[in-house]
Image (tube, rainbow, N blue to C red; front, side):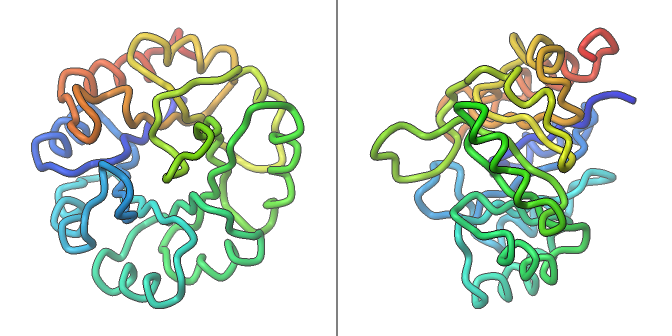
Length: 214
């Protein structure tokens, strides 16, 4: 089975169409104002209408019930990705607002971080391993930083998605060393923060899905 691919931080129609045509499995829409890739729920819904067979992922940071209600009403995402300090129990609550489950983002800089992700087993449907943000950062992801991807290779408590610093140039090697069944690209497929590059999206998908990447 080829690696599943999420292209995250989608904000324009051309990039969505390029990702869908190239075989993206998931399209991520960031509903967090501090991100340079933030979109409104209405814009996310318009773009998600172009997703074809891909699944929509609403990326949220410590959302309250009011926001979750709006997300469900306006976007109706397939998946909600929680990228804040949400507890396992909160992940279980949030499942009620997404059609195909909840992913919990976990920053990974060492083996202890990876081990702690096991506490979400039975509460989240998958773990998204990301790089730790820089000190003093005002948002939890999308910084383009990588880490030792081999740290997650033995993780088997939940399905996982590899994220953090992935590019068309390094994703095949990252899949090999991590054993990741799915990968997530944000800044690595951009020409500037928040500006997706269709050629890099296509190149990323090609590199991630070629057989030798597994």
